[in-house]
Image (tube, helix red, strand yellow):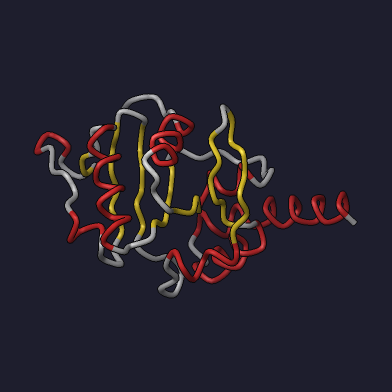
Length: 164
């Protein structure tokens, strides 16, 4: 598996004009949580124009499905227009393109719960806010989600204290 270059992937998506929100572990990190993450999770807008932009960017970073990488299966527009999850490997590392998260929340549903952030080198992206990340992890209640919740809650408390 290649080293992860999350900034490279974010730069490619940003420069490609893709509308998306960063969710998952990297969103928590960008919100100040001291956690590790091994992939980049995004929820893109699934309209035809945005899916076409996303496909162009995925082509530039050689995105293929992680399952059976030797088959070099690439996502297509019908895949990316669905609510499903697409676990890809790219030249920038693992990238999960999620049609929806939680109870069917798509890009448009998440948009009011995002903040625009500078991630470095002039790359600006929409990132899911910490309150929503916590709510989603509480809802999912998987083993990894429950393990990270205390860290996320503590980070949120510290952020609120610092801004209040």
